[in-house]
Image 1: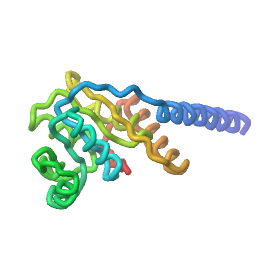
Image 2 (image 1 turned 180 degrees about the horizontal axis):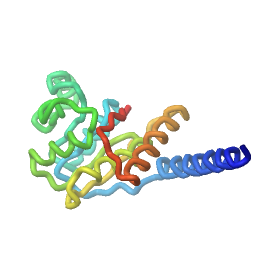
Image 3 (image 1 turned 45 degrees about the vertical axis):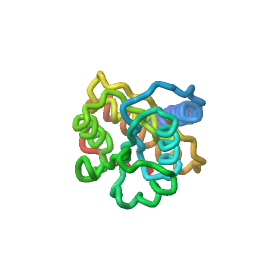
Length: 186
């Protein structure tokens, strides 16, 4: 019984250390990489992520935006008109294949179809570490990935949920077990 108690304390201590490290890496200010990429990939359905992608598109960081969502391009026609954007610059996951929960596979299908070699990934800052692990496991090693995390106000419950997903991805990656994961990006 004493060993179980000590083991539990160690597990909780390691989890807390990891959580504070996770908070540190997700809250760090990143230097903006000004490299131009073949495409901007917006992960998730948050308007702040899409708006950031549009700003980068207007600034010339990429000629295209790929949006991983279950919506169609037609659903965004008003958004394109309001922001004076050419809808041809937007590619939706529904145009590549049926929307999949595994965004990494959808991105792989996207870069394979268009033969892109560099991507700028836009996602919430707390989801970015997990997304980078998932994407790097399926994309070819010669693909350049530039992370562009978006700082959104998150509740600690959401951060803990994302940290748990991150730990799960790390653990399954380390032991070599990767089944079809359906972890949300919201």
